[in-house]
Image (cartoon, rainbow, N blue to C red):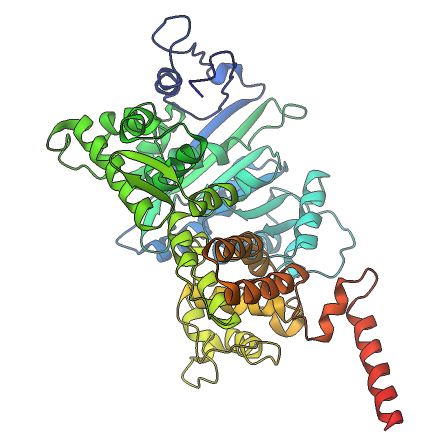
Length: 535
């Protein structure tokens, strides 16, 4: 960016607290020390935001128990701040959203029985068939919104909320980023979430993003944001409007890929230019200001920051060399065919190394297994219950997991899962099975595969979005290696993935326009009758 002196950039953000830090990194303007930085406070908001923080004693309760405690406080907040206006309630998990919505309806019924003043009155209306979790809720003007619902249900909820036919939507925190649903009041139920390994608080930016949903300039003079939290956290969130969490760099998490791309572009062609490049990054500035964030608990490393970054560049170049993505000799670096391939197809370094190491005589099963272990799938997780529920023919699964067990046992035992597993215990095995479900053209939206914790079609879509690109990489890498057998296998597998069906199965007909499940079955029955009659 700095090298394009004639380019003009305008960076805009509603939540970045260290804007001046970013302005300094962008570079000097007309010989100055930084780019021009303009800051605008809440007084510029078209709709004033009023913030309320309600703290409650935890009393040594676990995060899960405290979350249940907060469920009982939501209706009181609605009575105080809802004012019969559209309200979004944010929860950390899907199950939490469902539990909160159900508690709201329960409390609403109790207030009805007592003939108390109600914060809103539901609008009677017709509803189409929808997710079982929604059926009772919507009759009280309440709904849930999370990735576990079908796209049709989510669109329906969004439309009814925007048109004022729903008053309360309880959603997971991801809604604050992905969908534009303005409302008058926002309630953040709890500020803690489980990240897969430990409980942590939302970042300040996450909370600000959720609060930013409050206030509709065309309808309201002010928006209301309510945070329900632990009493000990109250003071922190009362000061939240000052936005104390600064933006940090993420370059260190994918340095190898970025440096490889710079080598491919010719920006970096030796160790010296690599060192100059990294010293112009945001990482170089922020790590010296906030070393603890990047793992330097003792502050400045031995030898100073310049020596650290010199070593970091050389170590990254060595890793790229071991992955056969660059040639690194006597301080000079050049991208190999594999490096060019990784840069062009946006393939991560560990994935590229994995692809290069696929044996020449690999079978389709081997290639699929390698593909499922790609670094691009590292965000795929086995949800808490899935380790046991995915076990095939296991009779040790607790009764509570019976529904999950039936769903995943049916999937794993399906005749179109070619390469089965005894049990799925790791995330990459989940990817492996879902890829085969796509190739087997299994109808993942069928009733027999539905469960409240996950929607298989959505999970399969997330897995598939990387598969074609990774298979393209396998093919081109096989060409560069001169691996003829692997190339043939990969091309056949690529063709099947592209068509979302094995080539030797009738489901391949679904590639044709107008051929769906029913038409395919009718054609198969016709062929079977014709074959039998001719013999």
